Length: 369
Image (cartoon, rainbow, N blue to C red; front, top):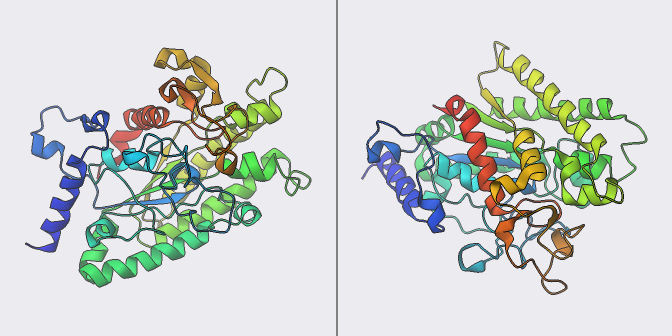
């Protein structure tokens, strides 16, 4: 069997394996197509960059407190394994890979023994708590976005070793690059530490982040990325921990954090439009907005069957995250499916699935090869 056929077969088999029954349903529009056509991979690989929203375990062996490789994280994952995903189960990059019919799980670049088939269909280089501000990952000792690009270079070298230069180029050309970062810059570096807020107001700090975004997207363009899905910021002020530290006695959504997210989302779309109009920029970058759907879940979660929208499932739900969310020291809620957030910062698997479904309904037509 030729290598191209092996890749296609491996991808289709991976998609057919259900992580849980709910993941088996068809997740893309396929009216008028045969079953085989609907299951055909829409990308050669999924390559992921960013922060804890899409980190499946790269932080596990770092000297940092920002980890999720302990219970209760992973409580609803296969065999209840805490892989390092900041969730009770799957994270958005897993659902995106399923939407593209590439595979059911995107594994981490670090801390995993990859099979050739796994490498051929992509990995995640993401690191929890990183960001576009160079200071953000340094504060907590995690992997910078620049280092993630270096990991990608090593990954490409492995592809060449496995499949040869021509096939490696074909895989990169057809890959979906999924980028999700920026929230930690605003929530942690700007609003929690004093290092940036004394020097920058919100608009000037957003401009600093855009410098990082511009550099990162240009770096991916130079490395051969043809299609990037670029995730915007959520309503940061409505995240449980940010309600707790900034929302007053009634823990309302904190407006300054939300303003920063909205300003960033507006300006980053302008940046993307400018970049993609440059003659030498050959990458198609699709902005993926998540602000509205997460705000909807936070404010009207009952419409989606959620009964708790302002607290996480872990501990009190007010502040617990990463090493503070640990079953050795505290319990978890009785029914995680009723919570929008699992810890005080990260949504539950069910909420993530709704968010990615909405993303696909809104932007999926722009992500076609």
